[in-house]
Structures are given as C-alpha cells and as structure tokens.
Length: 423
Image (cartoon, rainbow, N blue to C red):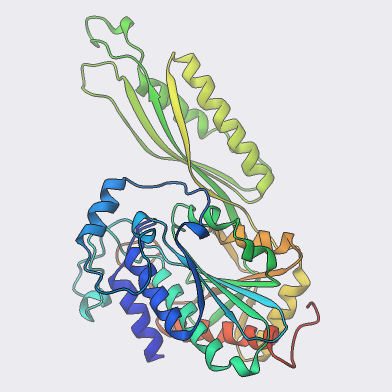
C-alpha cells in the first residue's frame, strides 16, 4: 500500500495535460525498464493525433524542464508523442493480456485550500496549469504496481502482457491515436478501469455499461466586418451565425436512445460597434451507441454548412476528439468475471453505468472485434470532490484494491493451471 501511494503522489506532483505528458512518460519508461519490460514509445505508437495544443506552449514547457541524464532517446517524446507501451513475455505459450491506463491531467490549477490533502501532505501539482482531477495519477500507479506483480510472479504465469499507458484521454484524443497498434490485434484479453465514478470505497464495478460515444469539434465562422451603426448592410455577422448555429445544434438530440449536444465555448467579434467578422465555437456531441453518434455528426456538419450559407459566412470545422460507445459482445464473460471476483472476496456490482465518455472504448471494441474478451471495471472510491473539480481527491485505499483486482484477473487468465473456459 505504501509503495503504490508514493507512486500515485509522485505522478500527482508532475501533472501534465494531454500531448504534454513528457515527465510522466519518461518516469513510466524508467520504471518499466527497471522491471525488465520491452518498450515502445514515440512516433511508432501513434497515428492521427487530434486536439493538439499550441506548439509554442509545449516548446516552452519542455525548455523549462530539468530532466537530468536519460539513457534512452526522448526526442520524439519532447515533440508531444507521449505515452508508451510495455511488453512482458513470460516465455511460455499462453494468452496475450492487455492492460490500459490513461496518464494525462486536466488543464487547470489545483485548489490552494489549506485543507486540500495534496496541499497538507505536500504532493500538490507543481504545474499551475495542470492537475490530476480525475484519478489518472492513480491509474498510472495501479498499472505500474500491477506490472511489478507480474514480474514478481512470472514463474507462475504464461503468455504475454501488453500494458498501454495512453496519453490525452481528456478530450478523447489519445485512444484514436493508438488504435492502429499491431499489438492490439493480438490481444486475447484487455483489462481497464477507472477510479470513483459514483461508486463508494470498497465496491467493485464489473463490466461497465453506458460508456458513451463522443466527438468534439472546433468551429470558426468568418463573416465581414462593417460599421454597426453607419453601414450594417455591408457586414456579415459571424456572431449572429454562431448564435443561430448554437440553437440549431442543441435541437438535434431527437433520438430514441440517449444523446447529447453541448456548445461549451462561444466567442467572437472585435468591438461593440463592429459587425463581427469572426466567431469561434467548441462543440461536443455524445450518444450511447456508435450508429447514433455517426448520424449526429453528419447532421452537425450539415447544419454548420447550412447555417454558414444562410448567413453568407465561410467556416472551418476541425475534429478535435473522438471516442466510441462500448457494450460488450460477450456478457457471459462479464458474468464469469463477476462470479470469480465475488468468490475472491470483492464486493461486486455487475454492470455499473458509466454515463460519460472514455476513449478506452476504442481498445475494448477493437479487442472484441478481433474475437478477444474485454472488460472494464469501476474501482469505487470515496471522493473529496467530484471528478474534474479543482479539489478532487480520492480514497487512496482504492489503489491497492484495484491492483488486487488486476492480479486476481491475471491469476485467472494467465495462470499455468487455471484459466477461463473462453480461452
């Protein structure tokens, strides 16, 4: 427990947002190298990276770091190709089991309240622009400690382990970038989980449902400036177009199943007496199944195009985030896991609802599409404040419970003498 708590707090102190997880990635690689894992990182693990930030901010951040002596090439990590994959081969035939953990923080400042535990116990984020306010620091620590357990018990195990440390989960960007990894095509199983999510400490959610599909877009509308009092007819207001588009987009949720549209940011204009030549919008759509999200995305694009034509504007629409919904094809596997883990002493809640988006769904779907089995857990944890809040903190006792869950599953799936019938 003490080791995993120290790990969690070390990563909490170096919180970094998506595509900037430089120190985080380097620290994970060092840990895995010491354990004897083979490693993949840099450009070779990435494809299409959405939602990249301002390169000058990344460059300035990298320049501010004192990374010391490093005995491996980090040049591509410093360019924002963050995250890594660790591979451990027991040398004996058996299933290939994947484990995924997200590693990014949120892009705002942590609470300065003196009663906030990271402040009281000296593990507050050292970066004023980032905080682990969703438990990803815990997810990293859980995965690394599980890797240590794999190495310690390697003589009792068979097959291979592929441990994915994924960047840029917030904004659902990193899963898409890593989805074409060849290693994913060979996984017989993949395990993943999330801390908190409304479950109390000690409760283990097995076989998470209602992981929502999500797509995010940045939209810029371009009009024509004019004097708002003397010659308004010469202008074409991008703000009027954006306002109409906002109302139109929020009317699109006409589906039998759950769907969401949210215009979270709307800005524009240059002055109170100027017809606005430009407006910008940040938009997110969600649905509880992949067919509806694709239809909603098609209608969103049509509405952007139609509104721009109606208001005589031009536009630039850029996808910046993408994830899928997930509902297992193999409910019997969920039942087996639930029964097994309950027998191992865990307080099991079958099929808890997530009701949010998480791009782990891309990995879960891909493994099942290839005939493997995927399962997602919720590790119940009492929270001091809700997810994505500046004073978020969780019950650190959950860390050891989560490791115990993964170890129990590995014993079941990769034991030399004890494996599920589904292999």
